[in-house]
Image (cartoon, rainbow, N blue to C red; front, side, top):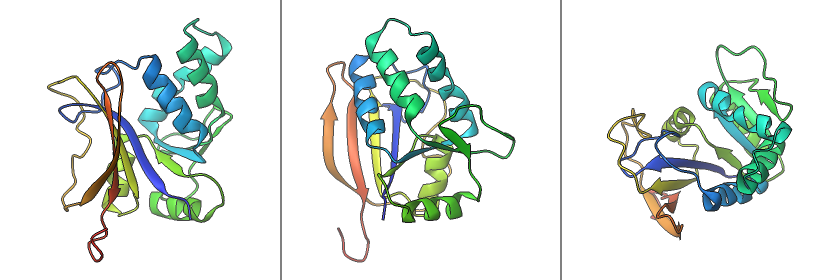
Length: 187
């Protein structure tokens, strides 16, 4: 069964705002490698619309090698978009979800292939509430934004996690790798 992995950039004070963090070459390389190992990435409508930037770089490269390479990887990565308002998606590697979030994710978990990554704050919260996230990869950037969209808003039940890895980048960002703790076994 495939794992569901929440992977997202955030500020030190817990906000998810792509304008508040700087994705340098090292960050692009990290997420490029992550996407190469992804079976599928799940996005909500807002994040999906933000990500539609990347195909423009495939068609018209920027000249920044790390961004251009990331754009190609992102363009080729399968995506499932959850939206109540979008009727279609233009990106060839994307499709709209056919079922509600829980049913879609449970079906995806049963398919063969690499892990399922979740890259939208709202979906991370919803899947946390449904107890469907196996692992969190939180890339904390050395920025205090002071405002924005908090990642874990609306989480009302305690979620116990165990740190199993870290990765530090030269510019000061740190990825914290957590897995859920099974309360019954403690592991």
